View 1 (cartoon, rainbow, N blue to C red):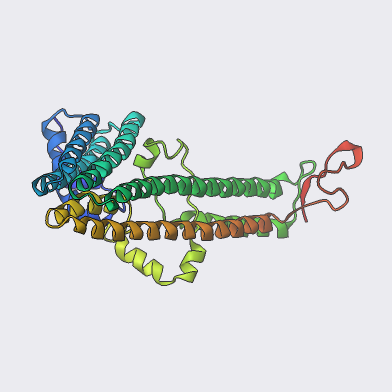
View 2 (cartoon, rainbow, N blue to C red):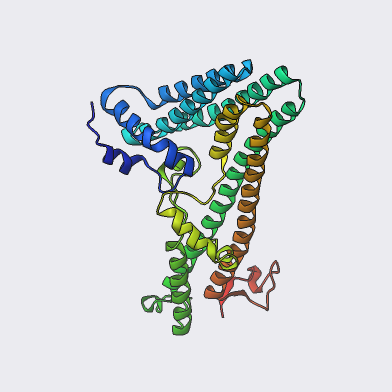
Amino acid sequence: MAGFTLDEVKERVCKTRDSWWTVWLVDPLALRLVRFVANRTSITPNQVTVAALLSGLGAAACFALGWWPFLVVGALLYYLCFLLDCVDGKLARLTGQESLFGAWMDYVFDRFRVLVCAIALMGGQYVLTGDVTFVWLALAVVFCDMLRYLNALQVYKVRREMRSHIAGALERARATLSMLEPESRGQRGALSDTGEQAVLRHGISVLEQILRTQAEKESRYDRDAGKQPDVRLPKVDLHQEFRMRFPWYQRFWDFLRVRRIRTHLVSGIEFQTAVFILAPLAGAVAPAAIVWIVVPVGVLLLAFEIAIVYKLWLSTRDFFRVVDGIEGALNVTRSPEAPTGQEGPGGDRSQATLR
């Protein structure tokens, strides 16, 4: 068996930033459990994922019964489910057993668990109270969970496409600069204006600085989970306009970063915690308390998702600003004698040239 220390486990499995619930209320126990499993057992991450699903189904069964003792047990089982759900990924990273199939299991089981627990919790309360509000609440919980995952996937896709486009433009700028280098002057058709070289070098240096100062980190876990292709792309800071509009945001971001907490304070993790742990515990005292917990946390989740979309919109503006900067650095234009789409002398279409 391996002999990992607790410090080694922390160094190798903890994400740079995570949810406040995970950092404060799950990691202290999860890290020790990961160390024990890795050092003393032969349990695999996929087995832990299955155990998390079974715990979630056990919580759903308790929720469906509806009575207060079962709500308490269900809440405890859901915490255990969430704990195991954190352990499987950490164990995989620590022992080098990360796999795309394991990531698929984790993703699908999470969605299935939320669906079943939402129906069970709200259905059990509807049977006991006859209040149709719980039926609508079940639909709202499923909708919020679906929306946040779809939004996260699409935001990630758009940001990565923007980074990829900028990285490609940077490579084209470097290739163009190589054409202007002194050693290329003797080649037929090579351009060699010193001023153009200076413009390109400045543009490239600006772009490289933008790429280096990207704040968002892409973890190896995300790459293995299929969210990233095998090729690592340079980082591009596409949040400049957001930071300019909200100057306090960077200070807030730095404050949370040193504590490993991300600024998305009400994400799916906090939403599930409120709905399937806090709400059942409160519902054991008064069923109406479930509504008073789920509704506000659902509103907060949607508010944070709207903020993410707003940041994405500003990022697209930054994207076009950066692209314009690249075009300005390259100073590319088409020959006015042969507009786009028209044939030039000899049947050749006009080519992009440096002014």
